[in-house]
Image (cartoon, rainbow, N blue to C red):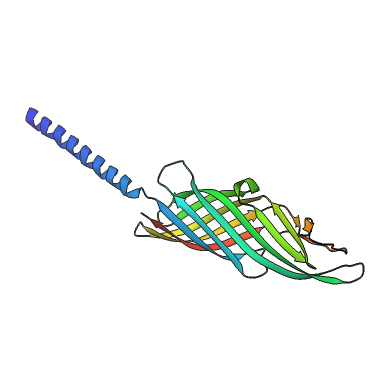
Length: 208
């Protein structure tokens, strides 16, 4: 009877040790460094084609946020009218929005959810910049921007994930000609704009 008890104890200890090794192996396999690359296909406040992207680096350390970078650029061309004499001028604005962001990957049984937030300011080398040309007068305006975003991903083979994303960029309304240089600009024109909007992205994450 005593031998059976000792054998049972050894069996339990061996089983516990085996389960521990399997758990450690699974944990090790789950740890990875991931590179995210996303392409911007649309921006809700842009009148036409956009040039946008988002990149990020994911790591396995819990509770520590991952880091990324987002950028979107587009051109807005329009004619505006002076209501006092019905004269009009052509205005062309290039807008670039850049943010540094932090994010977390939240695993689900089938899909992966990524949520994050970002910020852009001059001292971070990221911000909103508008360069406007109107009647050969150039205006260059810079302001801060905040970002919130999420991605929905579908992983394959634990190494590749394809995902869709939406990045909401928010900043104050701006007057495109409030910071003029290089000449005189006469007339009464409404050049206030709100370029806050959302960037839609498609992308991939590769883990190794």
